[in-house]
Length: 238
Ligand SMILES: [Fe+2]
Ligand SMILES: [Fe+2]
Image (cartoon, rainbow, N blue to C red):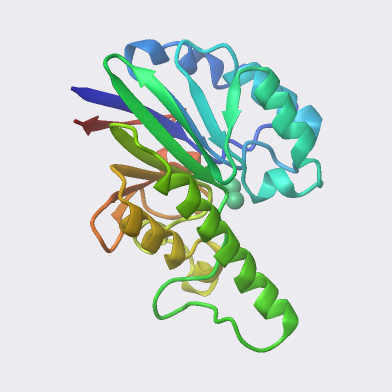
């Protein structure tokens, strides 16, 4: 049995974008069993932009599961955005998981926005000024949320959905100087510790599509500028 996973992130929708993705998405049922949205759905995190997201992604023929990204947090209206998406059937995860039944199998998605922190060789350390420790602490909190969401999944297929990257592999192509703001090794460590079939993220617009955690779990950067289309599809064999 193969589970077909469609995914896209960083669509950064706003007024004027209505209808730009929908024609491609209407074909989803032929190509995928589930659609994952990897955050940065809006430009500035405004509810009006989230309404455009709803118009593009609601009422599709497959379940839609999302995490939010840093742009979606910009206007401090995360609760309103989450409610708007949820009320229209888009499952928004933040430190929790959803289990979907697809055919005879269960597919679990554990989701968290994630955060920066960097990767071996370029990582931030929990030391010094309060502001630096606050930065690192948020990364640790997000990794703990992912652990609790992922470790509770008992589904046949386990997928991790984040906005920030869990591996350096898929940020390659970005300027080296900003790697610590693009993701964190902690998420990769949690994925390897708990186990998963696939990890999906966005955020690194100039990164690379394919990579893996150090433990070998496939990681895909689905930022729309990276995949260059309305969504990418991946197969998980069980
Ligand atoms: Fe983005
Ligand atoms: Fe982002």
